Image 1 (cartoon, rainbow, N blue to C red):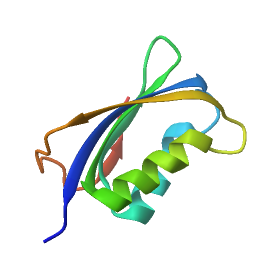
Image 2 (cartoon, rainbow, N blue to C red; image 1 turned 30 degrees about the horizontal axis):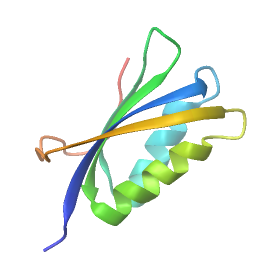
Image 3 (cartoon, helix red, strand yellow; image 1 turned 45 degrees about the vertical axis):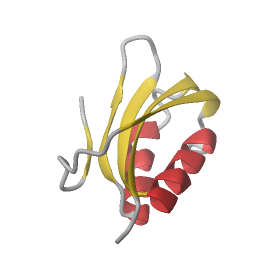
Image 4 (cartoon, helix red, strand yellow; image 1 turned 60 degrees about the horizontal axis):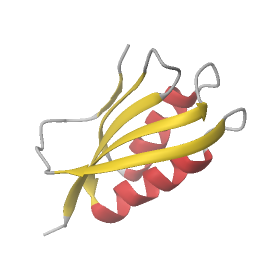
Length: 93
């Protein structure tokens, strides 16, 4: 059985208005990760990633770079217990 993990991440820097949410969804889908991503009022992006450990780590690694127009300053990750509440990965408003 796969070792599943859950990461709650807040990404700061120039991460809004640069297609960060859409590209995060693409990265999560490519790695088979479930959860969500949304913009926060403070200009950061918040996301929850859940899935196989290697897939979540790969998605977090992508977040540290982001899409071409992004300038990621920091990815703050808090590890949480898995809930298996998600069926897919979605962009939230």
